[in-house]
Image (cartoon, rainbow, N blue to C red; front, side, top):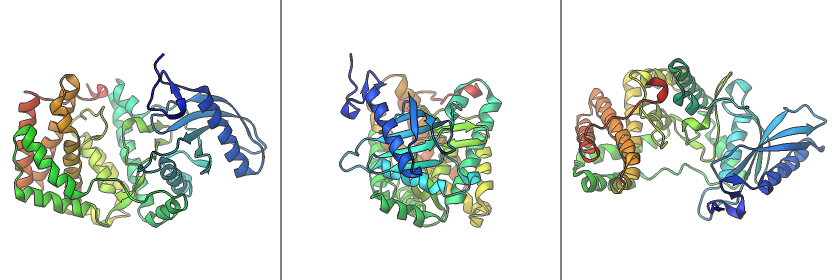
Amino acid sequence: MRVDTSASDDEYVDNEPNVTAMGDALAAGEVVLANRFGSTITLSDPEDLAGSGPAAVVRVTVASSPFSLPRTLVIKQYREPRPGFADSFATEAVSYQLFTALTSEDRMCPELIGHDATHRVLVLTDLGNAPTLEDKLRASDSRAAEGALLSWARALGRMHATTARREADFNALLRRLGGRRGCQDPEPASVCDQLPAVLADVLDVATPGAVCEQASAAWQRVGGGVFRAFSPIDLAPENNLVTSDGVRFLDFEHGCVRNALIDVAHLRVPFAFWQGALALPAGMSDAMIAAWRAEVTETWHELTDDETFAAALLDSQLLCVWKQTELELPGLAAEAGDGATSRASALESWWRELAKQAKQSGAAEIAEHAEAVAAALDQRFGPGLELPLYPAFR
């Protein structure tokens, strides 16, 4: 028998949840519901939903209740946070509180039925067994995958539009639960100082001072107060359900308010931070960006101007590509095998796209540098690097 030591309190053995952990979550859920409704509500039949984060995730049946409740609910119970790390329970509880206060049409996620800080537990509506966006991308139906991606982009836009002026609300709720404010993005100086050294060491590519200055300026603009809205942060396709009512976002363990254009960079550099990221067919990213933009222009009228929008998105795309390269390239240089080649192909494609967009925006020095990095990636990890399409588009 192999014990998974990444789980605390022996919650997981052979990657299977301890029955005790599921029972604890069910009992904690009953306490939350009793406090919420003032009467005993009995839950049964706990089913492990295999959460990959710091919580046990369990679907339960409402066995008896004097109130009208859904037939099934989802319970998430969190372990104690590690010292020095943000409390995922507080962040997710506040994120769901923020959305539950909205109308059902504007709620892009499950509804929060109740929560309890003592037991570190959330009780949520159950969205059922709908496929994830990842499922759609890995299936064989290109039309279904295309529709799911456009629905995801529209849902992301609605999420941003409805939370654009709610930063104060989010921070106030976070203070009540003792959560740590702010997104944990690296400081501009750290990436701008470190990436040139990484590029020089691994790829023998020099980064001109003018490019570093432009990158630092882009970071400052992205971190400014314009276009701020709630972000789930983790935009991996596996965290999005494709339901009959549209895409619904799951897992707000890292949620915060930041520049929404950072999320939109994931439409141009598709799902960059997800290790399973592959390529989209020509024109798909542009269609997704147009779908997102249509949802937010009433909120941010400035983005109706093509030059303003292109410049803001290029800043975020630059941030995304530089940050991910600084995180991954040193490890790829030391790694061998198909995994390294696949991620190197992803990086090469993103630098190539950055060069294309920078050239179209008149940022000639950024474009020239990006082309040099893309070529060096192909030489170092190729030749002939090419990121394959998702199975749905092959």
